[in-house]
Every structure is written in C-alpha cells, then in structure tokens.
Length: 401
Ligand SMILES: *Cc1c(COP(=O)(O)O)cnc(C)c1O
Image (cartoon, rainbow, N blue to C red):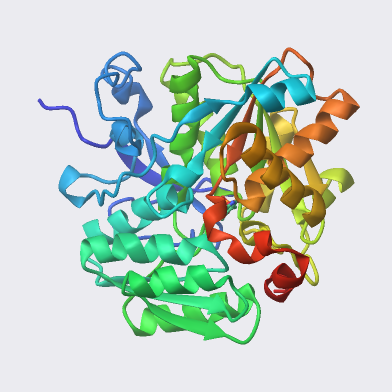
C-alpha cells in the first residue's frame, strides 16, 4: 500500500481535548477554543525521517506527512518556507554570543512568514471546495491570504483598520482581494468578518479561529532543526497571535514522538512591544491567560494583538521551555531593525528588530550565555514598513490602533 500524503487523523480542542472531524472544514472547537491537528505519528515515523526527506525540495511541503492537506493537487504553492538560517557573526560578537543565527522569514513569497500559515489555511479551504476566504488583518496577513486565494481562483475578503500600513492594503488589492477599510480597531475588523463570512459563504481564516495556520507555521521548527542539525538553546520570537510560537512548540513534540529528537527543548522567548505587551504582563504576573491590552500601539504591526485567542498556549509553551516574555520599546526595536541591516545585510522588519532588543537584555541579565546557540526570528522584510523607517513622525500616524 502506498504511504498516505498526510497522516492526519483528527482535530482536538486545545483546552478540553475533545475530538473533531478533520475531513470537513472546521473553525473553533465546540467549546470555542483553538483546534489542533493530530497525526498518526507512530505510523508516519516508519517513512518520515530526516534521512528520507533529504532529497526533497527545501520548502514547507517537504513535511507533507505532518500537514493537514490530503492530496498534493490541493497544495497551493508560491515557494513558501525553506528560508535561510543565516549566521550573524557581527551581532554575535557585539553581544558576546558564539553562535547567533537569524532565520530570515522575509524571504517568503509575500515578504513575511504569514505565508506559511495562510498557504495551509487557503489550501485547506480549497481542498474542501470552499468558494473563498475572509479575514481581518492589521498588517501582512491580508496580502498573504489574498495571494494564495488568487492562486486557487478563490474569492478573498479582507477587513483592515483604516490606519494599517498602505502597502498592506495595496498588496491585497493587487492580488484581487476585496479590501474593506474600517474606522476602528483590528477587533472591529474581526467582528465585521465574523458577521460577513457566513452570509457570503466564505471560510473564515482569522488567527487561531481555524486549525490550519498553526500547521504551516510549525514547519519553522522542523526547518530550524534540519538546518542546524539539532535544536538551538534559545529561540526569540516576536509574538502577535502567537501561531508561530505555538506551532513550533507543537512541532517539537511531534519530532520527539517521531523519534527525531529527545526531550530537549529550546528556551522560547516571546517578544512584544511596550505599547502592546499582554504576554509579558501575564508572564510576570504568573497568570495562565492574558488580559485585553488597552490602547495598543506599536509600529511593529504584527505585534499589535491586544488579546490573543491562544494566549494560554503561548504562556504554557514559554513556561514549559524555561523561557520568558519580554517587552521592548518602539525606539529600541526600530534602532535594532536598522542594526540588523547594517551588521548582517538583512533588511529586517521592526518585529525582527524587537528580537535583537530583547536578546540584548537577556545577555545583560545573563539569562542568555556566551555558549548558548541562539536563533532570532526575523518574521518579515523591512521593505514593507516604509512608514516606520521614515521616522517617528510618519510612523506615529500609522501606529495607533
Ligand atoms: C503577524 C506577524 C507577527 C506575529 O506573528 P504571530 O504568529 O501572530 O504571533 C510577527 N511579525 C510579523 C512580520 C508579522 O506579520
């Protein structure tokens, strides 16, 4: 018998563990929590090994056994994943870290790692024969979703706050999406989408309101392992909705069950901006979930998430890994985005800059040592943040939610 393309078996509520059918389109669990995709890893382990996949193209589909798309003909491909893990020797020397690496997610097709998640979410909607997708976006998600919808010949509806960066509105419309600018916050855009999507027969792909985006983002965990030949000691991740952090944490568990790794885990550092820092606040207070952050503002648009649906999963991963959560100022993160460019030749997004600022603090406090292997995630290209790089005056107009 041929091995299946995917070893997906069912979906599980992230809070109650209740099972849900994986072969119909699903959003939240019956209990209104994020759903997680579960695979028959014991069966997959027989053929899905680092050795066996070595000759496959280096993109995220090389991990198809542990992705939720059943047949290759439904995989929408634009060259997502397989991003470089660059050594950062100049910054490493500056901070006193022997091995510092930057995972450059700006190299994804639409310039951010949103492509990993949305390529899976749109492929899932496509596999289930849905006519289109809908989502709110304050930054890179809208353009990414629109690109994959265009690839599939599907409709895409995006709602953005009126003050979202101009390029994000433009890219979504260039990819043929219907873009609604909302006078209000990202949460208002979210409410509008939640109302409109069912009426128009569109599948909603808002962060963590479906189980597929996490699956795409988790491939960053598999990739870092393959590129490094082991797991790093520390991972710095700029956190908005937290899909990437939750996803990588899930990937490490899968990799252990597959026999790729043992029980070792990197310390996961969740990085946010001081203008919107619900996760560091909850972390410091010892809380299991975060509270809605009031007046959220930061030039790092990917981090402007006042209350993440999966906050309890982010906090559990951070604590379970022995990591921490850190907030840095917009001034620091913009300075460090520039520093990454000047030191290493990578045009980093402000979110990537935030990780460098957080790493400086961890190095000063001694929480990260000279001999730690550190992977810093640059989650997007700086080229999409013209207003932010133009300076405080220009950025401020776009910074308020
Ligand atoms: C969306 C986004 C983030 C936050 O990602 P989550 O997985 O939602 O936490 C970080 N950086 C950039 C550039 C983004 O677009």
